[in-house]
Length: 315
Image 1 (spheres, rainbow, N blue to C red):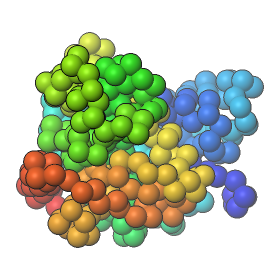
Image 2 (cartoon, rainbow, N blue to C red):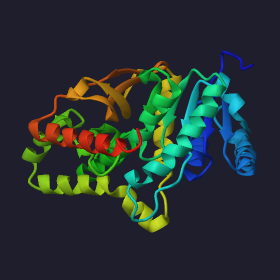
Image 3 (cartoon, one colour):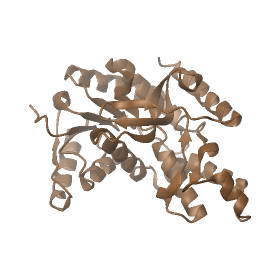
């Protein structure tokens, strides 16, 4: 039995994304226990050994081992990065049928362990797979979270910071909607420090809406650009998952753009999609309903429609 005063995170999937997450998690000293589970048990064992050899340099001790699904019963958080990766030329939604089958078998194993903590999903298409986990697990919607548009929003903030030449941590802007081709930027609520984007544009001729639109396109298509060059994306999503993990285990009540279940918010029901939400030890405390302008509302509605149409083939 696990000591109730320590946190246990179970990572399902020790591929590039999972290991980037595990590496970042240890380097930031976020949890006391980390269990690695993979269909390739030798791979999981090797990764645990390698990670353990870096513990002397970590900010705090983390016990890492290759485990079994029985280890999930005492876990506080289960992070799923397992599944087939996105190939060049393949959209996130192309992965749907293959990864849905994989996820159903994984969740059945976890449920059998008696797990009653929080799920954090990263595998694509993340919005639909978060819905699958929610349905299969039988857990409350608040306890199933997808990484959603956390990474997209980080890319957005980074590129806007570069454009305006300010610290990206002082850029407050979000991408919402599907983590994919129908996502949208919420320009109407975006600020640089305390100034709105609109104010920034009016103050200086060198800034333009066209440049900003180009930035969004680069954000939306960033994964394709990276996959074309190096075959996969994993560092950014690994660090995004750690940020969400810190918000959960630290009971932070932080606001992050995750994939959350809509139950009337934004005029929609029965769908997981990227929206800002307050995250704490219970999972999703509250979905924040932004006041979108007319164009943004139409784009968000379109994103919901695409997700629901795609999801109808597997639900």
